[in-house]
Image (cartoon, rainbow, N blue to C red):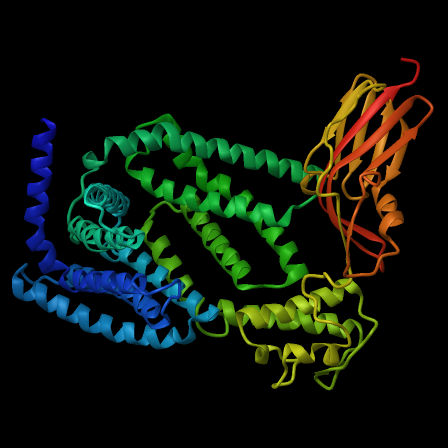
Length: 592
């Protein structure tokens, strides 16, 4: 088939789908048009100010599209009525009415567009989207995976088709505006993009939503997608799993848990891997890579999730639960339960896993178990625990104290900042109802300082430094980069008989000659000697001379050059905080 014939066939199929799609999803199409118009109206506003009401309307209309899909698909799956105009419009009328009612409730719930309202709306919308995926397959034992493949394929087709139309029209408009000297502003192209994807794109996607009961044959699995998953995606995921296990072994050997990094690595790998796992079920036996992944992925991910829980537990112990940590733990628990189900269940109904996730996300937005209630409870407990250490709680109220350590002052300020930013100060149980941040010092006895800047001497190297290095008289050059972010406690480089080691935790540079320690210096002591007498809260710039340390040992001549330094110093603790450090160490061996 030639390109023109293919284009003609695609046009005919699209044209023939207009009527059936309008009859089937009339209410959804109406909401899509309304959403597109609302977004364009928001773009048309002068300046960058976003009208709150239009934003709320856009969020609600997007949710209403998904609600209408869910209701129509549910009614179709439960109905034995004939496919006539009357019953199609009847289902659309029910979907339209229910969507209007729920949309109005969502609009009221979005009052003020606060953090809590926004997260709650996002979670409910995500839950509805997951229900849209499973409603036609909730009672089926097979076919769910091919249904997902069909939806994904239709989404890609709709996006490509819309992108081609947008690029063509945008090119035509640009050409006309250039040739005839017309003033077409950039926001026109943004509106054109929203209009095409919002109306045409959504319509094309809806045109390809399978009807409940439709038999989607495995033979219709796209060859391009099959080849991509078989030859690229699954081998990469297996490689990534191997990397995570090596990293896991390193953590167990060194017993150092980089708590922020592990959770992100594992949770995203597990989510992507679960999605791919569902996609490959129809072709699980057509490739060795796919078969291995399908068989072992649920088992392999379990110990990695255990590593994530330990890592997250350490962070929660120190800083309490927040909404982001709550959802990481929630998704982690769902993944753990799903992997156990997939690993040990003989009769698998994968649609139920997605349904369970939809229910969990919905439940996380309301009640005493919600992300918001649990987070506020945890942060209140965190604040109460710190204040109790210094006997600052008397009869349920805070009393000022000047004995609080600098670190705990920072933590108390951080808790107050959390409530002020994401909730309200009235949610802090220890604070009076009329408390404001202006009264912080009077209530607690010290300054409000969530970032710890008021008691730290901020230190940086000179802005302009001659980075050229003269190696005359030296035999070896060692370069240390990004030491503040090194994962291990020590970085060690070796050349010939000489080794240079930097201990990140102790901030000590040590030189070794023929395996024996020859010389060492504490950067902490060096920096403290220079800036220790400065006042807290000030900024100190090191001189070029301060950035160089020269020494002579029995066998070595050593020159340490701090090519870049940025950090701080807490005089009360004598602790140097290094945020960024780059070192060059020149070493000469005596007698050479």
